[in-house]
Structure formats: structure tokens, C-alpha cells
Image 1 (cartoon, rainbow, N blue to C red):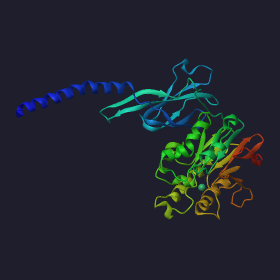
Image 2: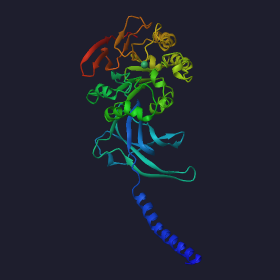
Image 3: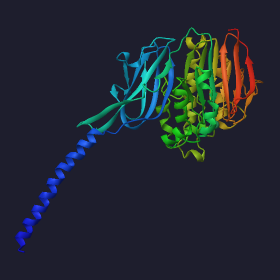
Length: 409
Ligand SMILES: [Fe+2]
């Protein structure tokens, strides 16, 4: 065969290849358009920051997505009875995309229960300013399962009840036992009082360690979480993203909130050793943060909302202790003088991994400190009869009770 014939044979082969390629490619593209990836809930919802007019919902999805929450009153109507208002995951005036979603729902009425549904659209293409394509919407199932419940605060209520667990260090099976019965007991919130993980390296660790269970048990029951940062949550390559999962009204890891007759101070004791400790790799800056927090605390205890509260409760991971490790000494030096002037009724801590009730002033406080263990659950009720504390172990047995009388303010 001549050389030119060989060339034409090659051209024919290429053409045939291409002519097959075109319909095959068209089929592939049509097929992929028909079967868009479905974006599902990977963890959550984690209900947080309830106030008298709203709440915050946080959850993660299996793919990058744009998300929103649909809210309906708890009035017996079907969720599909009306178009429900949408609250988008936005930040500084722009919808956010990603796998972690935070939606603030507001404009609600105080003391009411609501139902909500999570919605998300996968990001099919993101070419910046050239083209963004969102897929079809997928939501939490409201046909086979009830929508998620949530309630707004009622300032007129004369009692508040909550649970507290701490120092789980990623032992999800223990944590799950401690949350048993939460759906029946319906505490107003569950405080996760620090060291829920030994370090935060990535999201999978958060989910496997305790957050997936938190969504399954508390999120589905409409029970909010109040999260303090323990010393261990300062550690790991994902540690700086703490507030992405647990947003606060101050944008810091310390804040306060009022619920019924009680004001809660949520504090952060920082790291337990000096910032220069070799284990912090030169990255710790707890000294400056505690000083900034102490200045905020001075202002917080002067607020009308704090001063008008019948009960004043502090949630902090590390117990202050002038004789203890550096971090505990610093919280004793910086926070305790302010708290002693502020008429605190009770402080709830963890960190020691053993149960203790310190009401002898040995830690320099004029209020009792309940230190929970790493395998018990504390239930607290503050109401007309004072404050009642009940500590329960993983088998559900009550192992300790305390009662604190009402102060004359
Ligand atoms: Fe700790």
C-alpha cells in the first residue's frame, strides 16, 4: 500500500472514532444531568443559641452545598400546608457554600415551639465569577419523620433545667449512654462542658467523637447544646474552627445568656499549662485571651439582664484553683474576684475526671463548684425551690444529690 493510502485509512479511522465518540459523550452528559449527585445530611442538626426570638441551626452535608432552613409554627398543620419561610445560610450579605452550614432563624415569637426542615442544593459547578451551578434541592425527610422541633425562650418562666456532661474525649459510646433519656426528660439544653475531644484534627473526628450522636439524640428531640471550650479543644489542626461549629453571640468562646430565672455565664479557661509549654508548639495565646475575657466579664456582670436574674450560674471547663496548674491559677486570679462580687449561685466544671463538690471556699470562691467526672451526667434545675443537682452514672443510677437555697437578692 502506498503511503498516501495509509494516510486516508488513518483519517477514516479517526473520523469513525470521533463519530462514535459524539453520541457516546452526549449520552454520558445527558445521563449525568439526569442523575445529579444527591447531597445528604452528614451530621447534625445541632440546635444552638435559642433566644426569645430565634435559634441557630448547624449541620454538615456530604457535598459542598448552598443551604437554608424552612420553619413552620407547631400548630398541627402539615408542613406542606403552606409555603414556609426560608432562612438562608449567609455571611455578610452573601450565601455561603460548603459542607458546614449555619443558619440563624429569627423574628419568631417568645415561648413558642416551632418545626423546621433542613434544605441543601449541591454545588454542581463553581467557576467563580464565570459560572455557578446549584443542583436540585434535597431536604430532611418530613414525610417519614417529623420535622425537627425547636423552641424559643420565655423570659416569664420561673424555672430552667439543663444537663451537663464533660471530658468525653471522643468516647462516643459513653456519651451516648449519658444522653439516654434526654428525649423524655427534655432538659432546656445540654451543656457540653469541654474536652469532648482530646484534640480537634478534622471534622470526622468531631462527628465520630460526639457530634453525630449529638445530632441524632438531641437535634432530633429539639434540645439545644451549650458548648464551652475545654483546654484540649485548643489543640489540633482543626481547633481554630471551633466557633464555626459552635457559634456564639459575642463571636468569642465566652458569652452570657438568660433563660427563665437564670443567667448563664459561659466561660473559657484557655489552656491548662503556660503558653510557652512545648506541647503547644508556640501557638498558644491563652494569657491574652483570658485577660480580654476578664475585661468582658466585668462588663457582663454589670448588665441589667445579669443583675435582674434570680439565679446566676457559671459554666466553665477548668475549675479555678489558686493552688493548681497554671490555667486554673489564672482563672482564679482573673475571674474569681469578679465572680465573687457578682453573687454567683453555682459554678459547673469538669477537667478533673472525678466527681467533686467544693463548697468549703477552698478554691477561693464564695459559691459552690460542682466538678463532674468523665463518666457521669449532671442534671440541674433552678426554680422556685432553689437549685437542685442530681448526678447520674452511665447505668442511670443517681449517685449524688445537692441542693442550693435561693439567695436573698
Ligand atoms: Fe480538661
